[in-house]
Amino acid sequence: MRHDALRNYERVLDAARDLFGESGADACMEDIAARAGVGVGTVYRRFTSKDALIDELLRLAVAELITASESALARTDGSGLELLVRAFGRSFADHAHYADLLLDRQPDPGVTRQLRAAMAELTARAVAAGTVSRSVTTEDVIALISAMRGLVKATAKDAPVPDWQRFLDLHLAGMRAGSTSAVGVGGR
Amino acid sequence: MRHDALRNYERVLDAARDLFGESGADACMEDIAARAGVGVGTVYRRFTSKDALIDELLRLAVAELITASESALARTDGSGLELLVRAFGRSFADHAHYADLLLDRQPDPGVTRQLRAAMAELTARAVAAGTVSRSVTTEDVIALISAMRGLVKATAKDAPVPDWQRFLDLHLAGMRAGSTSAVGVGGR
DNA sequence: CCAGATGCGGAACCGGCGTTCCGGTTTGAT
DNA sequence: ATCAAACCGGAACGCCGGTTCCGCATCTGG
Image (cartoon, rainbow over all chains, first blue to last red; front, side):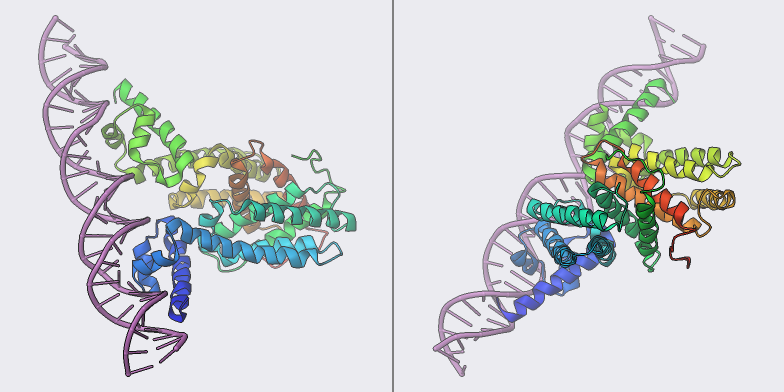
């Protein structure tokens, strides 16, 4: 791949992030190309289709999460879970403007399985370490992550402040308290 | 309005909910008309445009929430807040499949103000009644509602079970515990 | 500096969708 | 039963956006 080609490749990716963020999935290829300062033909040489372009954005975003899950697993005490959950929050915030687009497609099933397994392991460790209540399940953690997504999306428009952190603190308090207070115990 | 016209009006609304749920904003008017068992012309006689059709769906969904907020305000003890929050959860679940479509536009600002005011009042009452910790703000409640939206959306696809209720219980536990445990106190 | 390869731009094509329009049909009051 | 008003269906129009194609420009190894 030639040097200028690589340069354009990255410009297209950036432009796509911008425009998908502004207009959602309705952003059109011509506009993306224009924003990147190239012609549409150039975009199509790197990405088979509009779908492929979006898939690439998803792949890149998910790769960061994989990395985060690995460094969370490196911790042997119970703190890895919170680390990973915060990494999700940060990722959502980073890609807030166009995250819907990505979440509406499902990533590589292998990757999904890997992240899910990491969360299960980290949850088990957190429970064992007493960082969260015994009644907390992997599903609860997944629910929390999904919920943070909704929050970040809703506040991304008008609030530049990461409200999700306060929200997360509050929810974690609930997870800790769960052991003593009367939280519904039946999983699912 | 003739009787058959009213019948068709409602059929179109139902069909729109179905198709927007299946295909999102990409659902096309022709398909909606077909699902409703009418011609496109009929759809356009009732709704100026596709946008107007979506706006009507939004108006109807929000109307239910207004009603819920009123009956929540009717309670004089601190229980109204939880009631309203649960009403939001139920509404999201009811309209889960096409809720994105609605949330991406802003409803009548007057309505937004009314709901916000109701939440502020209910939060104040809940704090006064000790139902939630002193540190809980109206913003926290709004954040919770936004978060539930994300959760319902994520689970609507594969889980018919209302996971959001368990999630809500957990978060409410955190809100109650907030007074004693060290939850960040600075608002926003 | 040259040649071949690689990359580029944007006009043109095509399918799809929102919207309009009008001739025929249904309704319901008299 | 009759008629005017209201309503209906779906073909046709115009626009928009994804994708393709090909002649030209730009890079790089020798």
